[in-house]
Amino acid sequence: VKDWVAYQDLAELCYAWGRWSDEGYEQINEVLFIENYGLKVAIKAGNIGKAEEMRQLIFNTLLYSAPRNFDHYMQVLEYDRPPEERFYLPRRDVLKGHVEALQELADNKLDELFLSQPPRTGKSSLVLFFFTWEMGRKPEMSNLYCSVSDDLTKTFYKRLLEILQDTYTYHWNLVFPKICSVEYLTVWVTPVTVVRLLFLKSEWILMENLLIRLLEIIQ
Image 1 (cartoon, rainbow, N blue to C red):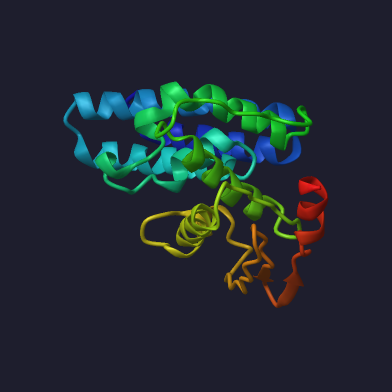
Image 2 (cartoon, rainbow, N blue to C red; image 1 turned 30 degrees about the horizontal axis):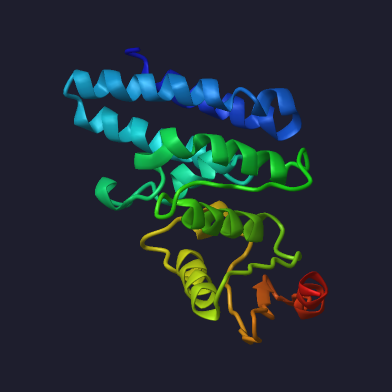
């Protein structure tokens, strides 16, 4: 516990191992457990400097894992927000089951997923964060979101842009640094469809217009 450099060495070993082996990547949760233990030890000892170092080390580990792990993405995305303003961590115990199910959907272990929970308990916000995660992981793919009204869908879209563009509040740009800037051209068609232009490095990628698919679903 006294050898703080050992925590850094452990993290870097896990990062290197995980780059070429799934087995190495799967040790991330254990590394995070050890790092959180070190943070608690530093806080208990009143060593604020070491506690901040451990906090930064935990952030780096979550950041390394975030493109592949939705739970870690949710944590790192709001890592520097005031605790009372965070969406996920205060609700993590309740939403963890949904997060794991969305992870299975992203990993192609599920073909379809239906989430059901009472109103105003975070379902829409969780799906919103999932959209931002998938857009960073697969920027060349199209995403379709439908709601009961245009207003709700526009609100969803505006919040999505806020997460992608507000680098002070959210760390999306750190999780997906290869996407150096994001610009959108939005066309609203009743009931809803979005045509997106995503600037990825120096190439413009025109996202597929999903209106035809939507109409087929409605029909």
